[in-house]
Image (cartoon, rainbow, N blue to C red; front, side):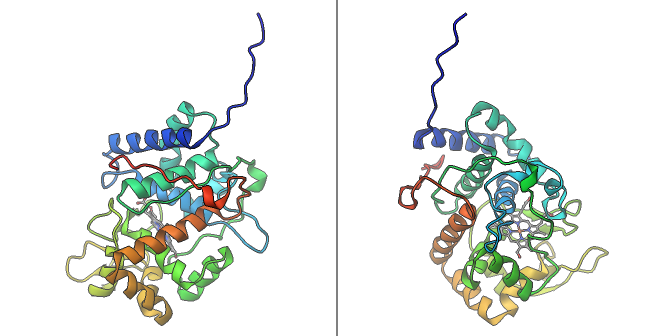
Length: 288
Ligand code: CCH
């Protein structure tokens, strides 16, 4: 037996597009989960991987995929995200050269585009790190809090008011699960399609406290089927936030543009890329 000649495999755009396509295929095949898509929970995985970033210490962020390990996997905010990590396991097996950290973010990009959102340009180059890189609990937002908490959490990542409101528009997607966060229900009537409906509903519907034994949340008075978290309501209560809520409610293109820009920033926080900013990959969606 001769040793096989080893070659270093340098993945290129086409290789990442293949991973994108595999995730998209799985997304559309497994349409029996929740409201009909793993897209929302995959996006939440990418966001919670990235949203631990602290700009002062340059710790946390999507580089490392440390949510694979306890204690980070057990942080209250990450409850339920195992469903997303498990969903991606067959994709990791089919493309073993991609790191978990690049895969999770690529899955976030794929989910947004496959749920008819804007293009999210992507850079690769994250490396997986061990559990000594797990971030402390408490870096992700607490839905029971007010605007000063939102500004403290997203400010720590380096974001301003406009980006905070744009990013919050992700709540057009998915729902709250009582067995995960304690909250219940979806924010919009189309939780598997990205639209600016979250902002429209925030402004147009009448919201009242839901009468139940669970944590404080709001429900729409008219149908009692939609929900808002206390942090969501801050986007209409706080004057500086409200300006952007009104802008995005009126102008879906402005929302898509700002959402895409802010998500690209979010997904790249703290990552030491070699791939230059002006050579990001823009993936073809399955319906392009
Ligand atoms: Fe969120 N989010 N999020 N969120 N989120 C929840 C679900 C989703 C907060 C709290 C919650 C962002 C910002 C915030 C998604 C994307 C983003 C839930 C329910 C809570 C609670 C979890 C459950 O029960 O399963 C708070 C607080 C903030 C900011 O203050 C940002 C930013 C993003 C992405 C850019 C998505 C998607 C979901 C749906 C997940 C699913 O499983 O359906």
